[in-house]
Length: 277
Image (cartoon, rainbow, N blue to C red; front, side, top):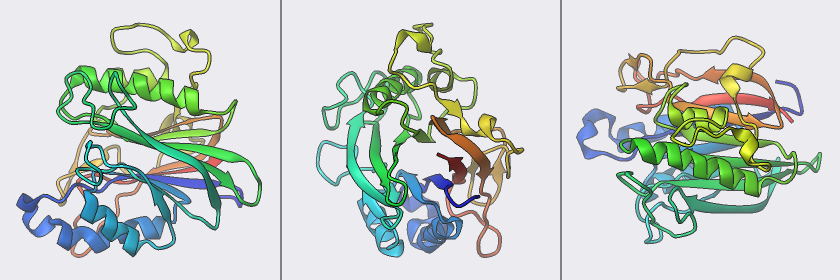
């Protein structure tokens, strides 16, 4: 990674679930924070933390500033999709959260057949040394609603197109609950998918996003999946992705870090991407 590169990391840290037993949040908290700390991202997007998990990670990772609302209408309730960044590297110019629904600016709104409200958090970050900006958007598509995933991806693509300033580099990362080739993936990666059949050309301002895995000049590092059951990898479940526009990819990896006697800190693996802006 050369000096001007930006490292981004997306990580579903798994919400605090009592039934996880030995893999509950109290037992994983330090390992999750340590994983983020070790990979030294300049910007990071997390999925699924509840309010107390988000608080724990902010405390454990003081080198980052964070932004993002919870997905519920009540402030601080439910899961977050926060974006973190290193303030010595970036100044935050603007930020916000929108809902993946027909009413994206309505807090708590549920889209289509989704089981829960789904959100995206974004931040426009200015490089303090170089002066240029990066638009980072972090999301988590629904795990049940097939239509909600495709339509949510369309809302995401359209909103990123509206937010993006000219040919500003943009990163869209997160847990998409779909593998490459599925409709939501195609909506983002080539403007197709879902029931519209319309390509990117129908939205002049919509970004030509590419999968960082496909854009990497080197073979992807790490496993072909991003899911675990804490103790083993779950094959063929690469559902966490990073899409980019206006930036070259220097490298792509799925970080299969194990801790303790060989377990994974979450039921997802982080995706790490180095970008040349």
